[in-house]
Image 1 (cartoon, rainbow, N blue to C red):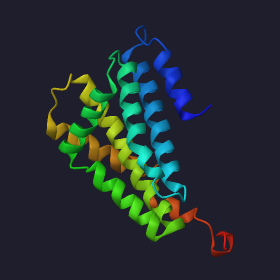
Image 2 (image 1 turned 90 degrees about the horizontal axis):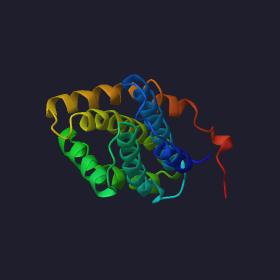
Image 3 (image 1 turned 90 degrees about the vertical axis):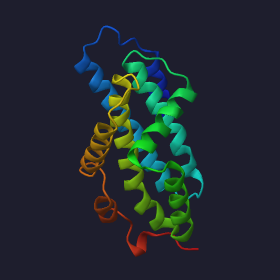
Image 4 (image 1 turned 180 degrees about the horizontal axis):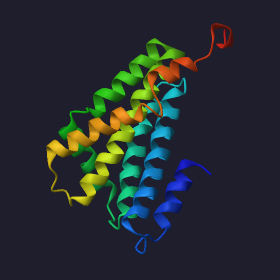
Length: 177
């Protein structure tokens, strides 16, 4: 099942009878799925493919909102992402441009170096969006920054640059022309 099919299945389900803790488990699964999907995309040696990260993050916010009983439009989900980027200082456009440039300059290595950053940013945005949605958009910006940085650091235990480097192909495994 693709990530999109998984998200659509989650979006079609009724979570109104779940406890807050049960909803948290589903929301964490959504964040995991989207963070790994985004990291996997930037690992691909195709420049420009990383531009699909933002739409995946929008779907993540839409799905997390649904889990917590809030139905959002794509525009509202995008507005939330942009607000989170403004609060945390995480420039979405700059990040995507840097990933593209890195992949162009370092075709195989660029994706390996960019994937952990993409993973941690998606992960952190996902957890910050939970707080954002629970607050009804009336957020404590200091708290959002704290959650974002805490989760960005925590994400490294799941996917980090060091882990990516230790699993990169050897010189003999890299395809040659």
